[in-house]
Structures are given as C-alpha cells and as structure tokens.
Image (cartoon, rainbow, N blue to C red; front, side, top):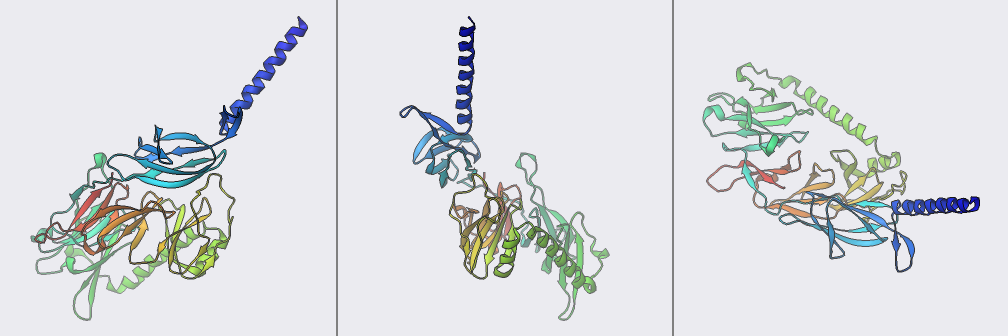
Length: 397
C-alpha cells in the first residue's frame, strides 16, 4: 500500500508539473503543433481599431475575429489590413516575434464626411489658439452689433453638439473697426492682443479678455507696453519648449540642436516632429530597447530638408516626408500628422505609413485644423460665390 501511494503521489506531482509547464508555455505564446507533436513559439497580434468591430485580414485572408482581438501567430512578417464599411481602411506590414505582443491601434475615418456650418454671418482672418481649442475670427459688413471679433470654442458638448460663437468686442459704427485689425493669442489662450492701424505712423493695441464682451469705451491703449508683452510671451514659449527638450536623450538633444528646426511635440509629448537642417547620424540604443517596439523601417541617418519623427518610448526615428509646400501639425491622437494643402486635407501615421485623404474641396487660405477631440476638422470655406466664407466642421467619425 505504501509503495502504491508513493507511485500515485509521484504521478500526481509529475502531472502537475506537466500541466504547469504547458500553462507557462501557453502564457508565453507557445502553441501545440499536432503535426510535429511539439510546442512552437508564437507572437501575439492585438488588433485594435477605433471604432471597434472591424474586419481583420491577415495576408489577404479574412480572420474569424473582429477588432478588438488577440491573435496568436507564428513568428514572421505579415500583411495586416483592417476594414469597416463606410470608413477608410488601414494597412501595414508587421513583424511578429516570438513571445512578444504587437498592437495595431488602427484609426479609421469616415469616407463620407459631413459638412456643417458653425457660423452664418461670415468669418475672416481666423486664428487658432495655442491650445488648439479655440479660434478667434472677424465679422464685418453685417449689422452694427455683429461686427467685431468673435471666439468659437471647439471643445465638444455632450452628444457631439457644437458651441455657439461668442462676441468679445464690437466694432463702433464711426469708431474702431476691430475686423480690420491684426490679432494674436496669448500663450495661455485666455487673451487676444489686437493691433489697429490708426494713421500712417501710429497704431492702437488692446488686450482683450476672451471670456467677456469687452467694452470698447473702456479699453486701454497699451502700445507702449506691446514690445514688452510680446517678449514676455515669447520667453514663456521658449521656457516651455526647453523644458520639453530636456526629456530627449542628451546625445540626441545635442545633435538636433545643431542639425534641426521646427520642433513640434505630440499632444502626449511621447514623440517629436522636426525638420533636418543638416545631415547627421543618430546613434542606436540611446535608451534600452523596448520589447515589441515598432517594426517599421526607421531612419537613423537624417538628411537636410526632410521631416522626421522621433519616438521617445521606442528610441526609433522615422522619415515622414520631404519639406514641401504643406502645412504639417500633430493630430490629437499623437499617432498621426495632419497635412494641409491648397485643396486637400490628409492624415498620415507618425511612422510615414497609411496616408489617408480626409477631405478634398475648396477652403480659404489653407485654414484647416482638427478639433481637440480628433472627431472633426475646422475649415474656412464658401459654398457659393454669392456668400462670404464661413467656418464649417467636417465630421471624421
């Protein structure tokens, strides 16, 4: 009996060990290959999309799963495509490595954008605030009470409703015409500095609070303090920029200081877009390598006149495009670059892949900006020759 119990105990221990071994291997990404009767290593593809429940194609074949899904794949390079009716498709070649997780994070945008008017009295000379959440614009040639400067808040209300424009100063019928002035935002996006031409040699400058309707008769001309104020604003911006640059690896910071310009951090400050002003080489492994990092081709050797994006978390540097007649800025996702041309608005991923045209059509003065939510685009356009330009939103989802 003692011998029998010992055998049962040993068999139980052995069985637990075998099960534990298989569970550990399964958790590490290994799968049982029945043809070879052995455990083979796999990697994990986490197919995320926004919105979810999109179809997944792997090497051209429809997968049974929908996004968001986790799919085990044997190591190798795969062509991954994510599609959903009415939305743009997403495509990328992805390298799957054993025991590592790779995410797609595919953003899909509407192929039938909806155009909605946000103003009806005309809008001219719009200027976006530094925080990307407000726009100031001028109204002229309307009834007296509507002429002046207005501010539109771009933060969305519940149910996706837009906010109404708010007037911050009125033009006087026989006095100051604020619609004819030039204006700029304060760094904190709470004030607007307006410059009005008075004569050939002098001007007037007023600082407006955007939270109220400023009384024209109580405004104080601050022309003598204008240069001091603008210098202070510029100093504040430089301090913020320098503070952000300290997050770069020291060696990279020194290289970019001598060989780059037009630094723009992504909204989450995880990536930096810049334009090379001279040829340089970025050393590898400035930070410890991150498992499951992007497998897209990177460019450690930068060339003058080309735009690049550096990823802080993964220590990877991607070529984006040649410097050209395009207005480029970050999209609120921090994964995309917003491209504005004369008659087209596009978006491209930070690694230079998946360029998608979001809107094609006329808009004034290349004025186009994304809403801070990333769900809409703001443009200045006129739908007919008889009507003045107005601000419109274009839905993306």
